[in-house]
Amino acid sequence: MPKDECDPEDPMEFVAMSVPADAGTDARMAECFVEEFGQMGFDRERLLGMFANPLYAGTNRLYVTYGEAWVKDVIDRVLSRWTFVRT
Image (cartoon, rainbow, N blue to C red; front, top):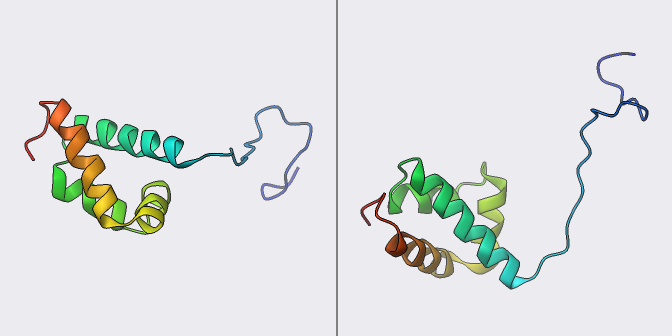
């Protein structure tokens, strides 16, 4: 099978799908991003930059949908629960 063709019988073939979500789901996803990248050492400014950067599709969708103030609130709220990053 040529490299650029999909094989419908391949059990390891990547399959993407969308999952219905609401504002609550988006808020929890944003919190998870902040927790994960905060644990990797991202500070408040770097986290905000990640959300604002269109190359980070998941975080940027939240930034565009809910705005910078919402993202800052999520970042501040999550970082206040953890001691791995100084805000």
